Every structure is written in C-alpha cells, then in structure tokens.
Image 1 (cartoon, rainbow, N blue to C red):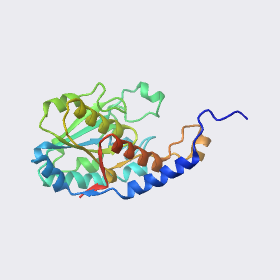
Image 2: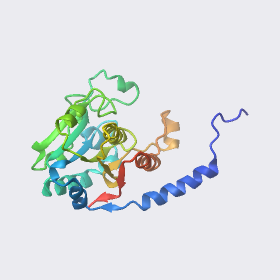
Image 3: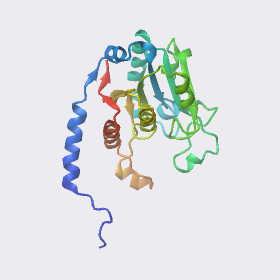
Image 4: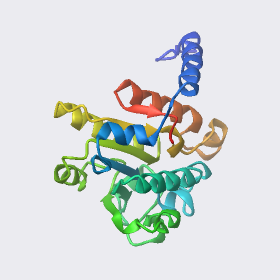
Length: 242
C-alpha cells in the first residue's frame, strides 16, 4: 500500500479539536450597546447579511435546515439594531444567470428572477425593509465584480461592521475577510464582528457523500474551523450580540 501523500497527525488533530471546542464554548456575548458605543453613533454601524435567501432556507437543491435555523436570530438582531438607531442594512445576495459557470461547482441555485433568489420573507416582513441595500453577486464573493466596494466608498463613516448569514465557510467567510482586509489596507482599526449564532453552514456527512459521489462537508466542523480562522485574522467572533 502506498504511503498517504499528506499524512494527518492524528494526535495533533485531536488536540486541536479539543482546543477548538473550548475556544467556541468560551466565546463572549457582546452587548449591542457596547458595539454601538464603541462606534460613537449608530450611523457608524452597518449590518451585512449575506445570502439569507429562499434558495438556501426554504426551497431548491441547496436549502438547509441548518441555514434556516439562523433566520430568527438574524431577524431579532435586525430588529434590535433598528431600535437602537442603526439604519445601514446591506444584503449581498446570489443572483445567478441560468448558465452560471458556478453551476459546474455547485447545484443550480438562486437563478435571477426566481423565488429562490429572493430575500427570505421573514426579513422582508420587517417594517423597515425599505432600508435594505441589496447587492447582487454571482459567486461566493460579495466583493468580486459587485457593488460592495462602491457602497463602502460611499459610506466612509461606517466604521463598525457586523457580518451574518450563510455559509460560515463560504460567503460569510469571504465577506468578513474582505471587510477586514480592506480595513487593514487603509490602516484603519475598523472592527468586523461576527456573532456565531447568526451564521451557519450546510452538512453533508461522509457516508452520504460517498453514496452520492459528492464532496463531504461536515457542517459542525467547518462552522467551527472557519469561525476560528476569521478570529485568527482579526475578525471579532462573538457568541452573540445581545
């Protein structure tokens, strides 16, 4: 039998898994008032919610119970932010053409003009949904060939960014990292905050993946690892914003 080309040090993995579990359990709860207080005024705060769409929550090939479970916490966060004066709500969202190149990597989802590509009704029912700024995107990146950077340039006073949505290891990670890296490039100490209760990712167990001939995607593992990786890069990961 040939040697494994990339041997996995089982002891180190087990040790890190234990460390990661304790890190996740020890995440603090940040009072929303604290975040807004650090920003000086609510006008300096924006909530970025990526891909909370029907096609990931309620219908289609990529709908997920795990993603659907973050709708209520996100709606609650939006409501509490609004009550405390926040008025910037930015929603980068998939809006794919029918022949999207991404469909060679992922199943067809969130095609432009379909119900899958619409914001979940739970968010749209909020009485201030007219404040939402929807930024269409055609990949897992909220910034590549989108209007996100133009929005950021037009709102330089927004210095404190909260990132929520789907998926922890894909679009949410890409968005949080873009906001943090662009702040670093500008030499700005603009915090990016990710509340763990308002992000999620899907799950494909190993056995199911083998049966279907698709890549495995252990949801709990990737959720924890990518939260931690954001933390490693200076994103403020908290348990929740209360």
